[in-house]
Length: 128
Image 1 (cartoon, one colour):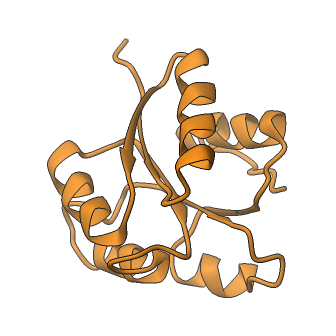
Image 2 (spheres, helix red, strand yellow; image 1 turned 90 degrees about the horizontal axis):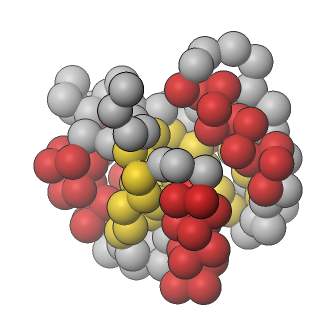
């Protein structure tokens, strides 16, 4: 069985390092992108199994990244989780734009990991 590959798109270095460390400890392969433009290029090149996407990013925000990936058949089937520090984010709107799940940071690590596993093996998706 091949390793699950997850692209973490987060511009806050400490948050990115924490998420990547947790994913790797759980046996996932984690890649990092610090801005929207890099995220779109990496998604096309690396074809991750899942993308964890911050909304507020330099060089193209999370919504730009999501729209770019959703509009391209080569990347439109990659599940995207939104991660945001904004407690007022419109979850329904984010899901209508293609997000599989929306999490407010800081995330509960157990709920977050269970949602990742559920997205990779479709079923109910718990949200934070």
